[in-house]
Length: 105
Image: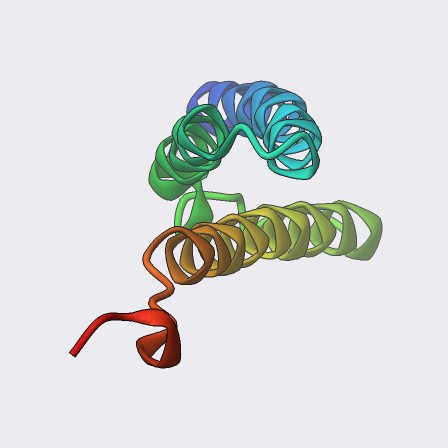
């Protein structure tokens, strides 16, 4: 990969990280407000924003500090992705919960 291409990937990954954080924070606020459908949309936007960049965050950076920065960005992207998926799973459990004791036989 050329140096210019690596810079574009880093800039794009940083933009994706900012976008993912924005969607994640909005998703958390919507989940807390019990606006579950909108929250799921935000969490799915997080996953879509980070997916293309997880494997493309520069690993062959020149210098240890650049490598550490790339690894930290990758960890943050993963944290947002996993947090979003966990939130989607939690919302689905809440929405589809059925109390069998309250149902008529």
